[in-house]
Image 1 (cartoon, rainbow, N blue to C red):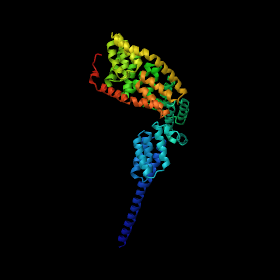
Image 2: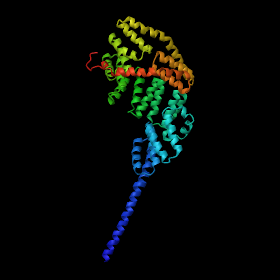
Image 3: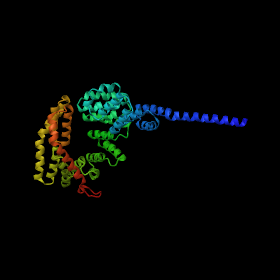
Image 4: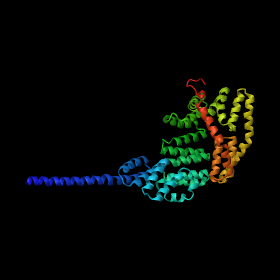
Length: 428
């Protein structure tokens, strides 16, 4: 009996301990671990280590009752990744779970900034900069791009300097600096900034492209080709890099290698405008006028407004003996010269009158008529950036909307035309 009683007592104590352990395990799994995960998520987001933060959030989402914070933090990550649709979904869940409205509004302001909705942001910049935290890079980039759009270059440079100082490991700050120097045609400085960006993030293809373009502007074609080739090693389908290599070979006097690269680019995209133009220039330079005409007529078909392109095409036609056809295009360029000279003068005024919508519309009209319909349209849109009710811009865009669609359709049709494809063994 004594043994039996002792066994019963021992079994009761064991069950009690098991119960305590089970309760403890539940507390750890559904209480402590989620709290640790959320704390770790906050830390990782501040460190901008977003993939790791997402993994932790997945764990917290399965176990935590703090549904509002889980979805709020996921919304922050999605915003930084520019996945704004998913960001919106997570914010709605966070709102339904009772997450503080002021924090939800801040995420919406940041999204507005990142999507270039600057007019809606005018009253919120100070609040965002005052409490920037780890969102500083996104805030700085949005402000800098907005300032550049309004040609407030001094403001852009000041914020950019603070961005680079506060976030010295952010490659994007140097990439944006390189872009600004490029806009200002300060190619040596652009080269320096793009190289700094690549030192921090060698995988940044956009910065490597910017570096290659800066090197080409400085006539350093051998170095530029090294950068284009680096891009092609990781992405053989990068058509801009293919065309870049072709142009470098062309400028270095290697016609055969240039032709090989340009034909590969045209094979990949039969309406690659830059590639076709360079191919036309190459064949004209080596005396193959008929092939030059064949390449250039494709580009003229979709960009008949481009006076410089028409001039090159006219020269090719003249060299091919098609004098009557050449005369039309050469005359077009003569007529355009006066208008293009005026365009240059207007462009010089814009940094001094950045909020002058009429001036921007003047630039837009001249650009549209004599240079590029696409660029002209973009200039009209910038006029609306500074004056959303600018009547001339609104009327012009409305009047030409069908033309923009038709231009796109023509290009798509030419893409699908199999007669434009080249065999790899094509002797041309």
